[in-house]
Each structure stands twice: as C-alpha cells, then as structure tokens.
Image (tube, rainbow, N blue to C red; front, side, top):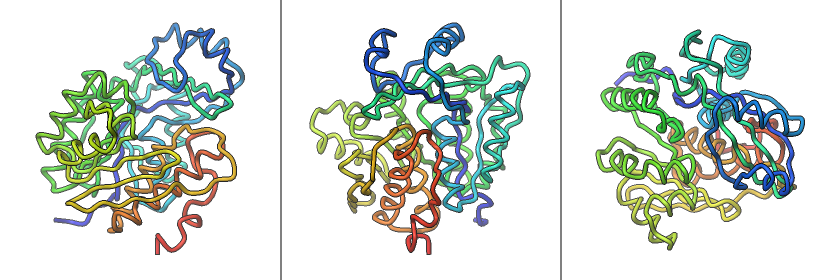
Length: 331
C-alpha cells in the first residue's frame, strides 16, 4: 500500500455559518428547541436571518470545521463539499483553502444557493442551529473520485450528509473506494435528530463493516443503542464497530477499540463561550492522533485540547495555536 498523500479527507455539508447571540425568550418566540438543529427552506432562512441579531459569518459545516482543525494541527487535509457558483460559495472555498485544506470539488451553477446555518447562541453557551442545505445537498456521487479517496489515510464523513439521498450515494461511493484502497473510514453521528431519522441505516453501516471509527456524544450513542443507561449503550455500540469514540462534555471522553478502553477528563477552560464546533474539533484532534499513530489515550487528549480551545470563543474554527497547545503530543 502506498503512503497516503493526505492524512485525512473530510466529506460533508459545505455551509456558511452565521452566529449570533440570542436569549431564551427569542428562542421560544421563534418556536425553536434550544440546543437542537433543524433543517429549514430558503424562505425560513431569509425570515430568520432578518429577525436575528447581528452575526459573525464564516465557512463551517461539521466536516469543514474538522478539516480546519486538522490543518491547524499540521495534518495534510482535503475537503469534499458542494458549493454554488455564487458569492458565498467563493467565500467558502477561499476560506477553506486559506487554512491549507485541499478543496477538491469545484463550485457549480446548477445547484441553487450555497448552504448556510443560522446559529443562535444563548447565555448558557448552548447553540440552536437552523440549517438551509441549499447546494450542499447536491453533492453527487460523480464528484467522488476514487483516486482522491484512495489518497487519504482516513476518510471522515458527517452524519448530517446522510439525510438527502443524492449526497448519501456519494458517501456510499466514498466508503467503498476507501475500503477498496485499504484506508479507514470514520463517521460521526452528528446529532440525535440524524440518529432518530436514520438509525436503521447507521446500524446497517456498522453491521456491514463500513465504519472503522465511530464518533458520537452521550445522547447520540444512547439514541443509537435505544438504551437509557449510558454504559449499556456504549457497550452495545462498541460491540458493532472497531473503534468507538464518545464525547461526554464536561466529563471528558471515552474511546474503545479491540477490548481496550481509554478515558480522559475535559481540559480546563477559563470561560465557556460557545459550544459550536466542539465535537467537530474533538474529532480533528482525535483523527490527527490516529493519523500519526498515537494511542487511544493520546488521541483523546488531542481531541480534548482542540475542543477546549474552540468553546472559549465564538465560532467553530480555532483561534489559538493548536500545535502549541498540543505540545509534546505532536512530537
């Protein structure tokens, strides 16, 4: 097997994030469920954008955030996500490439508008996300080049992209191409709503051996297993996948692989500002560790460091030097 050109190739929804402060009253008035993500159409996107407060705009999307974190840690990283040939699409591609990420799929003029996510952050740092998928849901399987997939040591996929049928077919093609080349496939459950909608499909992926590394938080794993007891849920899911990674907010994180279990505490922080991207950056740190041959504990530690950095400021992209924060873990 030839050495990979990329450490990690991320595939996901290419979404421009608009992040703004909001209070609980505003969330209630808008009929939203705090802390959850919902899909919206273009009309609702325009309406909500018009009534929410001033926001910070930046390229995002779950796998896009992970790609940015990987690049910040020094990994050779690629990204596949569909944008439109419009202003937001150009901004998204320029932003990703400026981080050192190889942006692989070109913009298209026949896919509507570039996706955006309106993120409302309440004083308790919870984020309520309202996502217009737009062009992101038009990622076609023809855009997946098996040679590009084979050039990555790990291919990382986000569960959010599983919802529309067109990108789902693209993801399935990427999974098959990765395994045909002897590469690993990592998959994140993304959100409990994704699990609730696609539990059977996700279980089919695990049972068919399509996923090598599975990421989920406590709620997602409990939903996946349909177990109220977290330990029972973790045990059930861990039995179906070679490596399971569970993020546990202030309680740290757990990884289980080949009968080995590792646990790390959450990294100390000065102030919790915004949890947007915490799971995405955790995945970046953990995948960096795995790409560089680190053990479970050190990979979890890298994930915890990256997640702790991103929750201390607005936005899902690291602002501090992650390499410096990681210290000897990258040596």
